Image 1 (tube, helix red, strand yellow):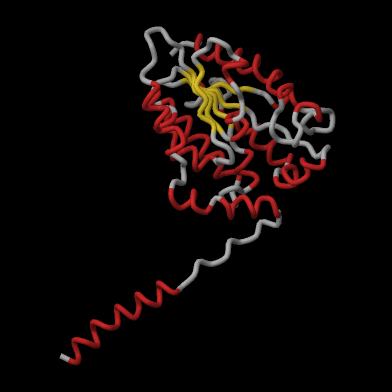
Image 2: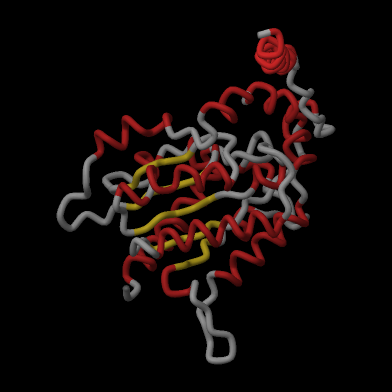
Length: 266
């Protein structure tokens, strides 16, 4: 009996030890603003990493596209989230599924719910700037590119045309832009954009590509960048998020890309 009690008590003591352990501190990124952001998001990262709850109810109410409807989903982070599509594309069946702060791993988690299950004809994806910043942890460029490819492959598997937006430039011309700019290397932005443009390039006999038939590159970067390689000061007050003037530049580029994607052969 005594031996049995000893055996039974050991697991209980071990369980008590685990219960008393505290979570290790979150590693500092070196950027106070980003550290504060990540600390505030701990509950989200653990409870609903992809933030599926954000659009679950709205998706259920949306229903399938009407006959002949050219539904398009704009999918991305805060730059998409704050874009009032109804104002810039009046009367268009464009659905906003942006979530502020998200990175491509989070977008992969919710891509089925917030894009595939809505049955759009095309998706406009704008992502990557928060990956560079490290919102959900350090990300290698190769990992971001792999996520880009995975999103495109999922879309193609469901006959959804993919429009890949370039990562937007950033600037540090204002005081409130300094932190965002410091977290986002212009060199990395350029490298990701080169990868995206190449990924969406039409195939040739010498360089066949499986990605091209349903992938189109939307070059916002060239229209927003100044002669120093930064976001034009008057297009983004905080150096990262386009203001009304910035979205006014982006809107016709997006519309042209959507029209081109929808008119392309299946």
